[in-house]
Length: 117
Image (cartoon, rainbow, N blue to C red; front, side, top):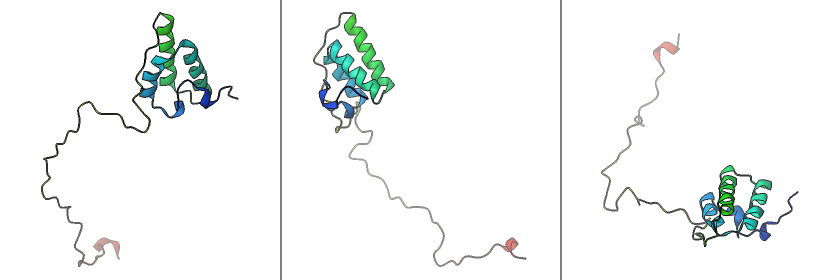
């Protein structure tokens, strides 16, 4: 049984954050807060990319790194931006597209000659 409640975690909406947002947000946590999240993650989803990111950050903190402000602008309800934009420009129009014919409605079905004795 879990010893931690979701509302006691150092990151709001932790369970709903995508991995990319978590990687940025854990940079603002202390070792103790990160350990708390790591314990919660292992007891619940135990997602390998998340566990690895947290372990890596803990190692960085042990080697002298300090918590930073992190990037908190990625929200679960916002899709990630693209680096290069759309490949299609607004001025492109397609020509006349028609689907291939699939038979003639007035044509009645005819049995195959070799199916009947």
